[in-house]
Amino acid sequence: MAQLRVTGKALPTHNRQNNRSLILQHLFHDGEMSRADLARATGLTPVTVSDLVSELRSEGLLLDLGRRVDARIGKPATLINLDENSHHIVSLNLSGEDVLTGAITNMRGEILERRSVALAGSVGEDAISKAVGLVGELIAASDVRVLGIGVGTPGVVDRDGVVREAPNLGWVDLDLRASFGEHFDVPVHVSNDANAAALAVHTFHEGAGTNLMLVMFGDGVGAGLIIGGSLVEGDQFTAGEIGHVVIDEDGELCTCGQRGCLEVAISVSHLAPRVADAGPDRREAILREAGHALGGALAPIIAVLGVNTVILAGPEDYVAGPMLTEARSTIERRTLESVTRDLRMSAAVDSDDLVLQGATALVLTAELGIS
Image (tube, rainbow, N blue to C red; front, side, top):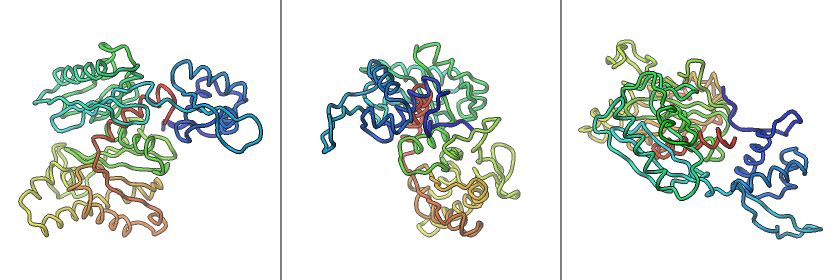
């Protein structure tokens, strides 16, 4: 598992980069602080904090907010904070249905500008070319320094930014990081789309907890897992690939060649034609069946890993309402009460934005140690 968040007190053995990350992390999550506040929070010496704050200010990452106004005795402290608009991140979501979406975000994951390009059936090199063109437009539109490019893509992605397989885009063993790096002189970071969405929740949505699972619905189904504050990828980078777990051996034939995969039961592409002409009662029944299948697949994962937050990300017509309700009921029936007592389940209908924000989080984590 890759540890995301620098936590705890600093140790003498920590290097300068870790100490920088500690300062940025505290300011990102706790807001404005004085140098003395930072020294107490991080365990760094006041001299080290002052040195690092000066360095970060010179790089444009921190803002001087002036004197603190309070009733404390002595000279008022000077407050500093992260300058969230000093750098932009270019974020890409390559998991849309026949469309590639890109955005310029600030360091809070706020989307400042959004653009998209139709795939129009493009795969392979043509799809890469369109993605590169979209990034070029966004970089040109940014009026401040671009900290990096973050990419959320379908498929299995390793830590080197190689997409091992993304069938819908016709990519096999594609070095996506290098594909962008050939054109742009900024860092590039790539992740699976569901992992990126989970990172977005972990980084930008306080209170999500340190053990969370985000299930993304679209043409397929995938999950992003963060356990103990760390993104779970697995040795083969296939953690969260739940779409082709068989839940019914006599079920419908899946594109992978197996029968009864979870994807066949609950993906939007399979549910859409079934609910298209269904009346309200039949539609609810279909979505409850999907929720039952999903709950059955998630229950053992939740029990084994101690997940305390589950988010279903996808179109509101599918992931909210009957599917969510039945998924939770099924999980509760199939696990001990103590497993689900504090379980929070919700629907996120802005899954495109979550992938874009997650791509931003990739860059923040890799370049600044913020997560």
